[in-house]
Amino acid sequence: MPSAMSGRVDGSRTALREPGVADPHHYARRVAWLAVVHPCLFLCSLAGAVLLIWRGELFVTLAQRSNVETLTIAFFLLFFGYFAFLTAHGAVGALRIGWFHLRARVSRDPASIEVKKVAALGPRGPGPSAAFDQAVELEGRPGQPWEIALRDATGSMGRLRITGVRVDHLDTFRDGSNTLLAYLARKLGAILGADLAIVHWKTTGEEGLLQYVATAHALCALGRKLDTDTWPTVVLREDQRLALERELGALCSALRDEAFLPDWEFEGEHKLPIIPEPLGIISLSRSERRVDPLSSLAAVLAVVVVVVGLICFFLARPPWVPGR
Image (cartoon, rainbow, N blue to C red; front, side):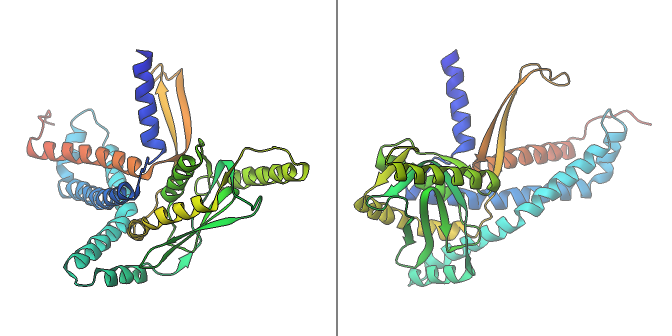
């Protein structure tokens, strides 16, 4: 029993905390799923709001003649409207992704479509940042920043700059991608044979990241001065950097698609009530610095679909309620 419980907890933690992207094809499939979830969530939220407004009199009557608060209807209107507003940009982005893919399929020159996709992304700017639990240095360049170019035949998707424990996505489009940084950590760990993990994210805690990076850089500088180990450090060879750069170049097409979608980044908290509400005397909780956007959006979509399904069920088969 304990082992089964541990397996379930680890599985849920992995689903919420890490995207678990294994290769460029997996990354592309993940972006495709994001492009599906955004418009689905937008359309379901819009449908729920329209149904409640269309048959508002029925639901108000049901609420008034049963043991249900009328404000529940207002809550669901706000609920649907909130997610419809938040996902509208993602739905438009998903349509643009689909349009470009359709044009690439029927075009005699798909490469030109990719170039037009880059032009549609707009100006470049700084992207996300994160911090590893270990410093990553390039062989022969201790304490110095080094970079990985994100480039394929179509063009550049920016560059990744690693400075000790910190990694920054530079010259990217829109807000960049934290999933790319998580993918980089996984690949660096596999190449170096180290358990490399990201412990701070700029998008969910910039102040904590800056404090952590300043401390790590100070200890690394002290270690170089004293010629001793003061911070865990892994060293990457130049040939390994070039191999990693080639592999990351295969992500560029998916990164161009992902740039059309908003990057939802949140902290998360797992809660397990020992004594449930309304008492709630004892509960267990565990916080995560970053929740996987795909899993969080999919969870919201599941809730919205269930609620819209119940609304449709009540419209198709209205429950009996006592008269006045």
